[in-house]
Length: 197
Image (cartoon, rainbow, N blue to C red):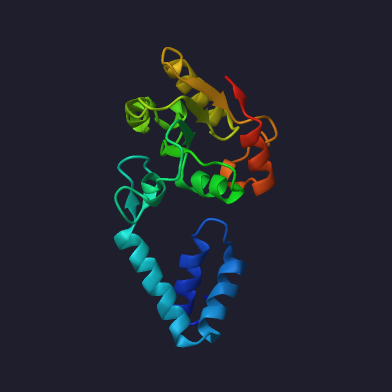
């Protein structure tokens, strides 16, 4: 039996189900919301509803978007000849925070994972292949996990017959980690020192 009233217990349980929040952290957030001015909780609730209602995937790059195409695809100051291929929208955010890439992105929406039943047809690979006309370089910026490396290898083989340079992020990103958890300095160095595949 919980020491908390039922509504508070439900909030803690919902918060604890989020990635990165254990029960203690969830309880701290719930206690903060309970003590905060009413408008803080209402603003948070509105923001969560708005995200679910308004955020979609860009039809061009498959990143999160609130307009079509997304803000990065619509930006006239970005280079069209370099395309950075990442696994998830979180990876775009991580690379953008490094502040060293001015090209375009393509989000695969995952990685190849035969054990999980995820094959090439489950990723945004066909869309990537359609975007190659004006591209001179494709940067494979998948995470250095086994699945990320396998996905990069598959894409490198697929792109081998195309008139495009294929590069991979440089060594320096920790093996077995997710790209979105790397710090901006590591990401910046890896992107700057990328190498041909």
